[in-house]
Length: 494
Image 1: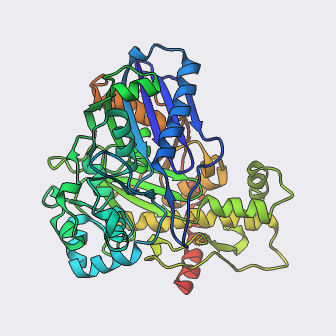
Image 2 (image 1 turned 120 degrees about the vertical axis):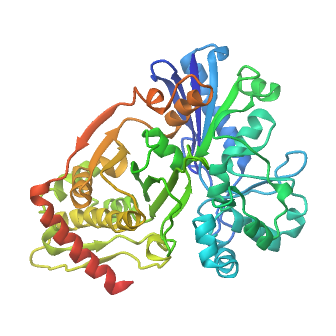
Image 3 (image 1 turned 90 degrees about the vertical axis):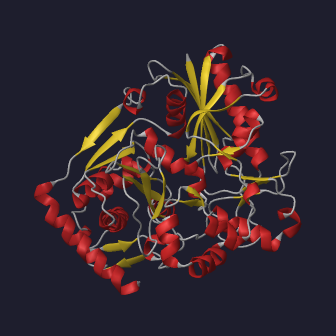
């Protein structure tokens, strides 16, 4: 018996097939091998054609099925995860009306800011747990005002994973997690927000049936079965946005559990069991995969734009003589904790939500031409990224979250011993590294959706822990001194 996971990213689509009983990966692949195109007709815009997601899913799926050689009838569940906050519009015949406005498109910022003030900041935060911001609801408001001829043809709105499920089954649905990431969900009243749809003038008929995150949401149609070589009637049994799904992939379900990623941008995602929010909306709060009105499970999302992109920039522009990130880490390790008084503010990848949407740019502080070396700058960069995480995690702690263990995939910045040891020590949290990814998590979750696994512990019992990093308590004062100095420099520029 096998389970399929589909991960719809903005760079590529990944497909993974696992054996249900053992959790073993049988085959996986992604498409395209070069990044998918993002169209930007105007500055700050970002669009993709959802048909390209489907095409690349088919290519990766075909590769996985060929490599595995399994009988399609033995696939018993499909899970889907996706790039969050995208907007897909279809007419009554399920035809696309325009390209998807994806997560990194910023055209809707003024719409969200105006709604936040006019609906009422306290009401938005207490009911939506967020500002409407630049999320899906505000993107739809932009379409309404700027493309009325398209708005008038809308039959249903979707998020990227809902579109893939529609192509698989011919049916359209949305989960509460999806509605919450679009800022359509009223957590106090447990329904689609009347405040948001009335303010923006969005007909309730635009919303498809609300479906459970886990369960038989729909089944593979005859058309899709023929396209993909699947068995007609195969259940689609799970779907969630990429950050809730990344947390799920690391078996993060319960209050106080934390998942983290550190790629181009960085994320800390923690589970909370009460309706809390940051009054300055510096972190986002969505329904987690196991949220229900009876058992509150919220995902508090801290996003740092300037993370691995700083390390990458240094490699390509500053450390060109070094052949790999490993070489950079080796050189940085020669510098002591605190980088001899050098501090780097890493926010050079646009406005940072954690700084109330200020764009401070990246800056270097305390450089001394007589004592500082290339290694000091490389270490200060990694420490600066770590300190930005700690700065954000303090916001999460003030919301009532206890951070004792951070779980992460063994990839990107977490491959650096400096990064992970500094993060563990300054946050006083144990870091656990695992061998997993979003597509694998979606496949396991599909097994939960069909009831093959009794619970999440059984579904993730084979999750492989690669390493555990403990805080260096005897050196923690050195880390905290460097963090305090970093905060002082940050205060000077925000």
